[in-house]
Length: 141
Image 1 (spheres, rainbow, N blue to C red):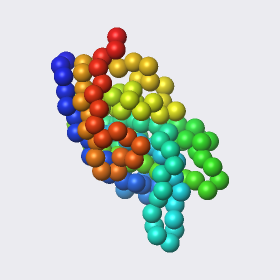
Image 2: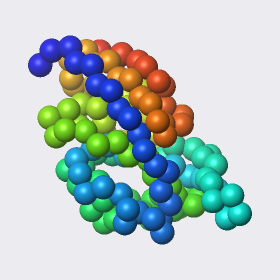
Image 3: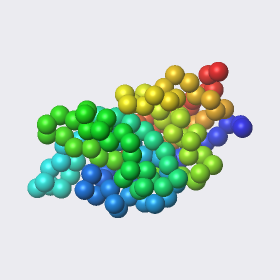
Image 4: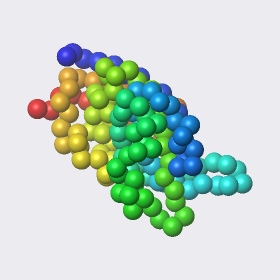
């Protein structure tokens, strides 16, 4: 493995009632707490909870074993929402690891303290609140 640049364009935000519209494609996703304004049909993000990756974003989020953990983090007026980015399978895990290592979401355990890949530059765009727009992570082992 060598130095790699990965551009990630996030789309979203999807609340729980709309997760069926998530793509059944390979990629990464972010889990947020947010509030929903019914009149404006907008969300206001409060915090980043978790970052994940999957071969099928739709199936993974719809059947994720951490739903209870995510919902335990909600205040009374909050809901869970997601952003996502489609990425090819060969870079998906590396992108997830870099995002977790950089941002340390509170409900992630893997990649919080280590980054097992060669130097990686990540550039984020789109629906990527709370994520750095550009950063470089180096292998730390």
